[in-house]
Image (cartoon, rainbow, N blue to C red; front, side):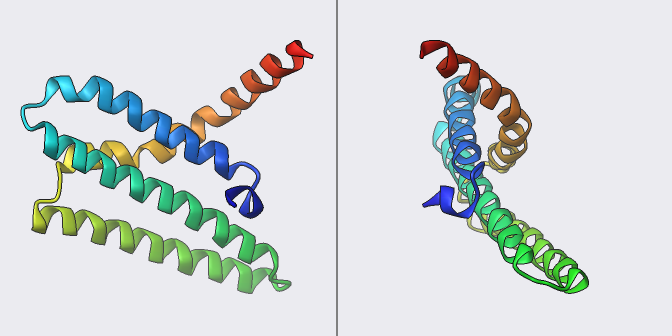
Amino acid sequence: MLKRINDALPGLVMGILFYGVIVEIIGVWFVSDKWMFTSGLLIGLAVAVAMAIHIATTLWDAVDIADAEHAKKKIIAKSMLRYVLVILAFLLVIVFHLGNMISMFIGVMGLKVSAYLQPYLMKWKEKKFSNET
């Protein structure tokens, strides 16, 4: 389903989840409250995946708009909405003590890490699977 929205989206989401597993395995050893660390990380990863999907659908919608100025305004409006919702998610975690804020932030940064690593992972994947044939 994700590939229908954007060809790179499944790889991006898998990168976010892989990053989350690595952070959980390493990070859980260094914190005293393991449950809060894990819940914050999971919430952050969920926010990162939601942001990736929202970015992809925003771009998909903007491409269908013929007027470039209208498309630009729509992208800006949806980006602002995305940032407001991320801030709201952080506030909910703070107010209701749903998880560790730092681990949540680290989880959200999974989107950045995955986006930066994706070109290298795609090259590695191409190289690995082209040599097997």
